Image (cartoon, rainbow, N blue to C red; front, side, top):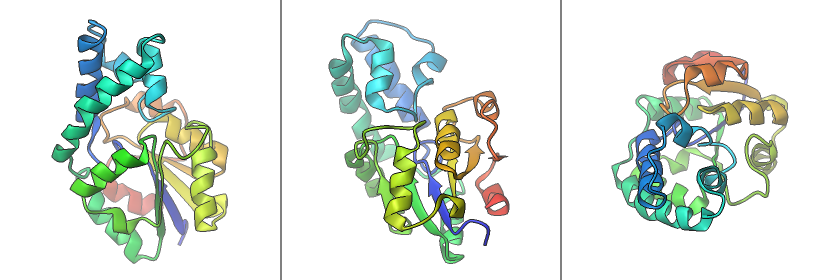
Length: 211
């Protein structure tokens, strides 16, 4: 097989969480700051350096307040989560082919567990790296390299699949094959193509052809 190790971003790649992220970003902007911020601006940093950076972009002086309000609004919404359409079947097929799968996400592990409690796919992944497990965050390669280290794998053996420009940049920096996906609804296709991923796919089924 071409890539025996396949790592995945979580939000907008494996789980269909774009809508609940946007709802919570709108909530904190309006309720905490009294602002109506354009959706594109609210979502620009999602999937990258983490929640603190997202809130710093909204208001550098009120980061902790914004994080608290975001989590209070967002975490109950995980009860509504579903897998991205077709993604669960593709994950099972990749696993059945003998691939070793992992998750590398900006979400902290506690919030990842909320998602897995709703969508029972945790058993498919050998490792999960949450946003609170490394000092540096995507687009830095550190989280991806930690996942590879846990698996005892080399970058040349792996691909990283994600819906954000930060994912593509991190994959390239780590020496992994970069695969951008367009179904997440968080980042525009143009933001992905600008980072020149090795592959760009529009459906989960297309992953089977590029991996």
